[in-house]
Image (cartoon, rainbow, N blue to C red):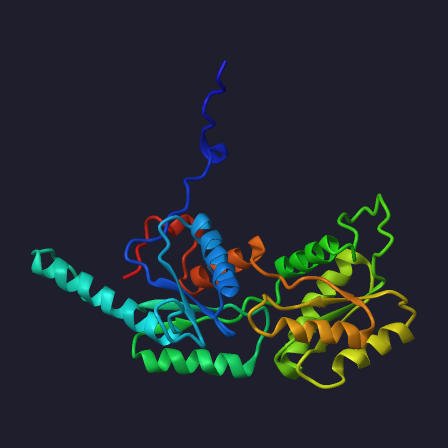
Length: 293
């Protein structure tokens, strides 16, 4: 017999849907555009859309300059033009509509941690677009990024996949170098996620800067000096921020193996969406009934 529908607080919540006429989520993607980076960005956007049906999500490249890889500035400008055109069409059709007065877009940088140089590029593109857009913080630090790092390390055979440690991984590292870009500020931010990762793995984790000479080697020396014998390098990067060859060089410098960058791990899309909804002040229970105008 089918089970009766549960009343009251046991009812299944209504599915979350993007508010009517909400601003677009524009993912700001760093790095030189390529088919690989585009595929990564499209997967992140796809994850965000799956979490919030009806979401208008777009991709703008910091170094883009054509139709295949549109620049962040051009994507924002086009989004603004579309919003204005929709309003004018509705008014011409006799609809009683108000002129749009909120942000045209919410720009979410595809960065795990702060990078002042890249964030300056994002801000400049927003200013040059001449549209009302809100810029969010970067995605980290966050426990979901610690989870993603753990998964990438386990995929490379450098960490146990379970917390209970019910089986042995011969190559599991006993010290982790968390590699970031963005200087001292990025290292400090990565250190917060590093503490969460250390709690998951029960091994020491120290952050270092890929863009500071000697930082990786220094941290490797500190970890070995404290008793770690088998190190691993975990990129605290989504992927586009830096040339992959620099990660290979850093791993050689530290004399250890490395896991893959975070890439389009599901948490990345969820965090991008969380930045968007937080910027708009959308609570899950309000999303359907509180349109943003």
